[in-house]
Image (cartoon, rainbow, N blue to C red):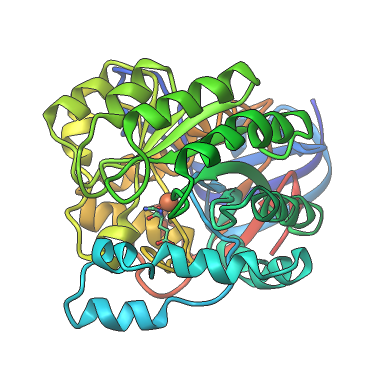
Amino acid sequence: MHADLLLTNISQLATPRAIPQRGTSQGELAVVRDAALAVRGQQVCWAGPRSDWPGEAEREIDLGGRAVVPGLIDPHTHAVWAGDRLADFEARVKGESYEAILARGGGIRSTVRATADASIEELVTLARPRLQSLVRSGATTVEIKSGYGLSIEAELRMLRAIRELQREVTAWLVPTLLIHVPPTEGRGAYLREVREELIPLVAREQLAVALDVFVEREAFSVREAEELLDCAVRHGLRGKLHADQFHPLGGTEMAAARRALSVDHLEASGDEQLAALAASDTVATLLPGVTLHLGLAAGRARALLEAGAIVALGTDLNPGSSPLFSAQLALALGVRLCGMTPAEALVAMTANAAYALDLHDRGVLAAGRRADFLVLESGNWRDITYTLGGNPVSEVWIGGRRAG
Ligand code: NIG
Ligand code: FE
């Protein structure tokens, strides 16, 4: 076997064993000691105990006894926005709720006003350092949603900003069209315009791979979301949902029945919602940054895992509910706030997060998968789930090249 590059002296190489499957145990990591990892082009061509390496390599790098894990996959961000939510933050700290702020025209609506006024260039300039921060913390693939545009033109501007960022940011970016909040007037006409103009155009120009809808009292009903998801699927887009953040309205069950890629948030889910997810291939994506920042209940990871659901973790990086600029910290909070084991959390933010984005070529370090991996500062893989506030990631490799 011939490799371009052989990384040696890896004290622990920790990787999920396989892409997820509903009903199978998800805490399972393979931990290889004194390992080596071989890269050819953008892919891993071999991984295993150093003494078993069967080939030769163009170049060899000694990692000095550090640990290697797959690159983190952040399956839920709103990394493109303008303006800030600092006044909202202070109002919330003083006792006003997130939903009340939104209902009086603040919250998401204030970010919509600021974002709708920004040019593509301004949006790119604002988003670039946020994404660089996610990459430094170990993210090698990042989903980014639109949703602060509202008008068709402003939504398209957001998606074009994401396309521009795809050209210049080293991480692999996955764009999602998010229908976030309805306009204050002309709701029916707006939804028609989304179905008849925006979704077909986004699909035609491949500006997004999935459609996401926020189902909540202050946002869209289950019925409205259902029509949007069905329309998206007819145009070749996959579906996703923000659901059960404050009230379990039935969106989770609707999305799981439609084989949506994921349902995200789930802070207020009850047993019925968890059962619907456990009986489907739809990923349950938990967002511990929201739990921390808004003081909501944590998503019920233990119940989901025990019922056999596929669970992922994301940062939900956004200015209102989760100003969390570190993928590694989302993982570490998944352990603290959602009660996941270190192994479950690492699987959730690698293989399972890849599955939530319909990406089947990454998230596992094995021959034929993308060579997206992290070299940690220490020799123990658990450090990526343990550290709070520092950065345990020493090197970020994306597609076989060192990115940071
Ligand atoms: O995932 N809940 C809805 N959407 C975002 C928050 C957006 C915002 O507050 O700006 C979320 O939490
Ligand atoms: Fe979100």
